[in-house]
Length: 473
Image (cartoon, rainbow, N blue to C red; front, side):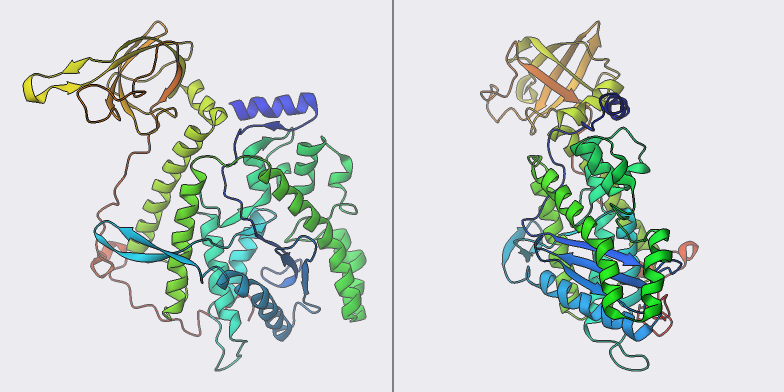
């Protein structure tokens, strides 16, 4: 609701409105900006890519004849020569992480970050990965040794882009749209130039002119294809083709770094560091997987693996929503409107209230809050608060703008509440039914025990020639 209101306000005032007070993604000190282009009418025929970690020195890689298989794989090898050293550069420095009831493991101190212009850029990265990870350096139709490894890492980056809360792979338009609301539709927000114009100076007709700001890829402008690219390819001049593609990529390169600067201008939310730790752990696990010579990612997950992945993503999504709300008052305001959270002033406390008798007596301080928010929570609902993140509470009663709750945890171990554990009279607080309590993994059978209704036990996965018959064949 608030985002819709912000869009209307942006349209009225002619400038995008902030819908976040903090940055909800990690931003690397050295991200790899990656802008791919593909040939129109082809699913996975790369045309060019501009990439790099230094905004002053982009690398331009071009396929002068995208329908030529050998040239495509030579281009992929060039891409691997840039991306793989960047990825492997994060593997040298590690830390030992102790785990309860599990062996310790080595986790990279930092991890790579890939930033693409939009979600279609993520989709094309996934397609590039699928088209290269099954290739072989020997046998019929060999490719350079680095190409299959590049495909595995591109597939990994694309998979992390779909993981809630992950910052390993970011789509610039999506992250900007998560922090600012423009006065245009979400479909129009997929235009990086137009979205940045709304954020920085207001709507601008020039931002939608493909001659001034070409599309951010991977598809090119049809007018450019017909009037510039086709004649250049017909000429078979590598220099002419390269310069034509440079004119399409350089404007987007500048916009990408402008987007990075805008996001860097926001302070990171409190939960961002924890989520980046999970990214670093995932990256370290993938690196071990590659180093041990495990096969590339399968084309399809088995039933048990798919169920486990879905469960992990659902838990990650729930945790991400809670963390964003706790980190950001503007995000929490959405839940206050729906009655899942409320804010107000503490007007009364009973810090020494107890429940039970004898040894079973427990300290349960009471807090009465005056609020103007709608409270649509039933008595007994578990509550959390951004002001005291380790604290748990339970709703006792809500009527006529007064909410009574009792604190159930986070008060210390003494017979009286620890200093600061109970809100003071006059303090403004916020409580919500959104809590990030631990959720265990579901009890799934071993893959060998997959029931016949779900295909039975999967066969051991070994890549074969059929896997390699992808769009690049």
